[in-house]
Length: 156
Image (cartoon, rainbow, N blue to C red):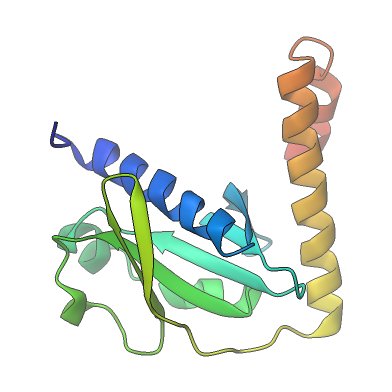
């Protein structure tokens, strides 16, 4: 069944992209708030410690109306767009990586150029990534008992 809405399309792209990340040995974390007020759709940690920011675009209008993507470069070692097979690839900037999904699978069509994070920012981002991931796991394991943790994570 074909997705009927942009949120459904985005959810399918996100799921397929997360599966690709896992196949590549990357650890994906969804909806990661960044210190600059932006929110990464997927922030993936590679085995070498590099961070990949993956922006999901559900269609051309989504891309054309959201020009915040350069802000994600400051919090990743490489920036990717993830789109579905119907998305016109020529719209996307050449200086970003390209992931294309079809159904529940995705492929990395273009690697992103590296723009290495400074070590202090990498350390802070690693701490944020670990805290967010551990907090989400704790909430899954004990939804009622983790209200204080959720409140503390919102304050950061």
